[in-house]
Length: 97
Image: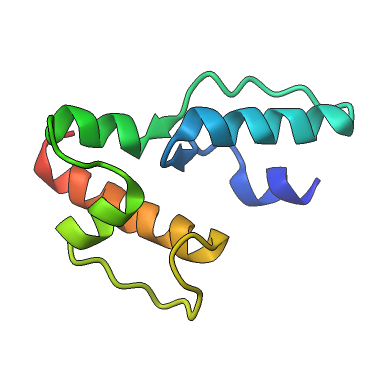
């Protein structure tokens, strides 16, 4: 499986991770693969904890941290969102995780 070769035993990081993990779990089950995705990092939950009472959607994070990506994709496209989430996670790591 290409996904497992890529991901190995890394902990997934996603914005609104429960949605993404549910999608991946469902896709894997279509191929008869069972994975425990109970361990993941959700940058939305981190944002809400670090920046309560502020907008914490991915657009707000890219604005807050002045995130720019190397992709030519625009906001709300998979590559852009994945890269933006990764960069935001690096900011959190510096702040207080």
